[in-house]
Amino acid sequence: MIAKNLLMALATLAIVAGAQWVSTPTYATEQADQRQESRDTKQEGRDAARETKEECKEGDESSRAECRQDKRETKQDTRDTAREIKY
Image (cartoon, rainbow, N blue to C red; front, side, top):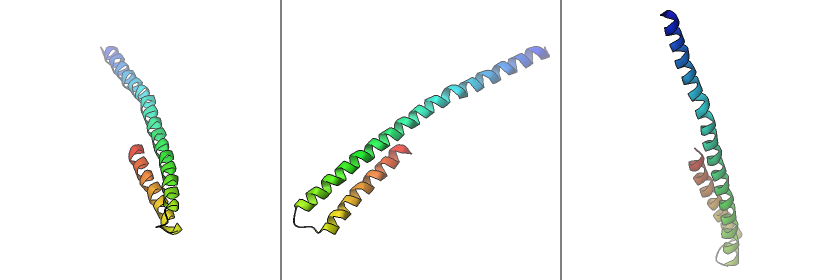
């Protein structure tokens, strides 16, 4: 009777431990996908920021400092979006 209960407890413990090992790789893969999506978003933001600055420089209505600031704001907005994806 005691041996049967001990065996049942060990089996339950093994099942619970096994479930934890299975879920860890799944979470790691999901986290890696989120990081990759975040990096892709940041890269797209860099490209958009370059285009924003080029368009600003082509127009004569803004100073170079204003164009730089526009580029910074674009990149910062992209970083915020990437953080939302990642976390």
